[in-house]
Length: 467
Image (cartoon, rainbow, N blue to C red; front, side, top):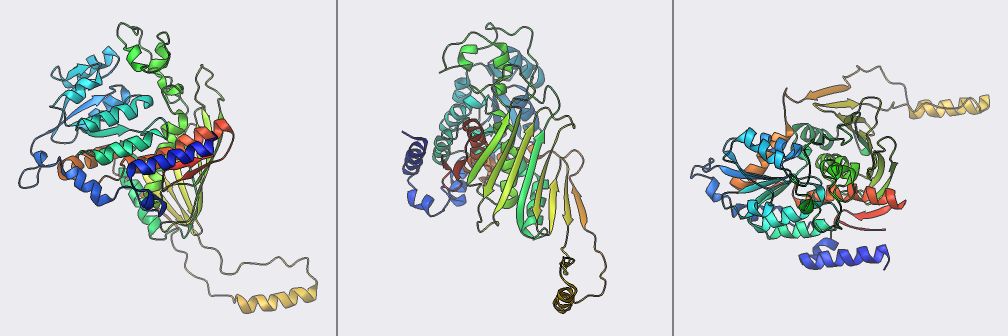
């Protein structure tokens, strides 16, 4: 069976499972905002008093208590009415660290099912390796837990369909942890674009480059690591047997068995932010290239990747082209930026600012008549002056405006705020499973495009792909 037929069958199966084939073909989203809100309201009452304020605390647990998991917990606990009650990880020292940070009352385990069976747990933060995301998230939703799921939502595009279905059947909200969709900076960029400040959008470029070993996923490996304190078999559950390898466990992002490469890690953030700003569902074609240029340490993942993505015209935006880049050996120092370019200016988004720069083409286009005869030049200039008469000089308006986030602003804090508000009050979540698949789908297909050396077609409405 060729790839196209396989993708078509996958698409039909997905639409049939969700029972919305006619809606999908007509461009209607799979789940409506009102349906999602009603679903989230089912579990909100016990966290609200009659006055609408927070009542009981929301008890959270973390599944995957590494650097990202512990960082997410720290941010979540900055909100009032949040309590950490349990932690799960496959490395014992991380569990000990959770007790050191948040007290011995925090129950710890290697088995995530114990977290899901714990009736004291209302919500889980899932920060496990990518290859566990689908299982952890679906099991958590089916056990009645609200889910904060680290990006990318899934390791493989096809897994996203099951997670969307699980979310639609659940009584709890799910939010995917690409926090740029909750950032006041990206909201400002969205407003500037919708107000027409740069005219018609035609091009976007974004990058996320790094210049450090840690940035290139060379995470520290503890000297005591071994099968006595790492649940290696559970980590590789369902895979062919393999001797314990501490590098694979602690630097899992480097390997296809567990991770999603630079595109799955970082392109996803860039897609998420862009889709918030533009209101887009995504591109319709994916073309990528890259390679392993510097970090020759046995990894599968590329350390340089570039992608080109075509966004078709919709009611939300004109047709435009997106260029993405990740470079893990960027000798210029690294950094991240998104630049949206229109025919009247650009919007640039950095770590803590949004810059608007406007431009205006001259009303007199100029001319190139030096190679014409004198008679032809005279005739041309006469017509030119009639069509473009000289105008009086105009005042020069400011053409650059910079908007900054407050000192110490943390968009992840806002992201958790929206998550907890959905649990307490049943409010809508933007970064739900559908939104997240539309961000991680094109990112994961960039890996496919690069490795197979071809353009991949993506349907941003039905979230399916073909060769």
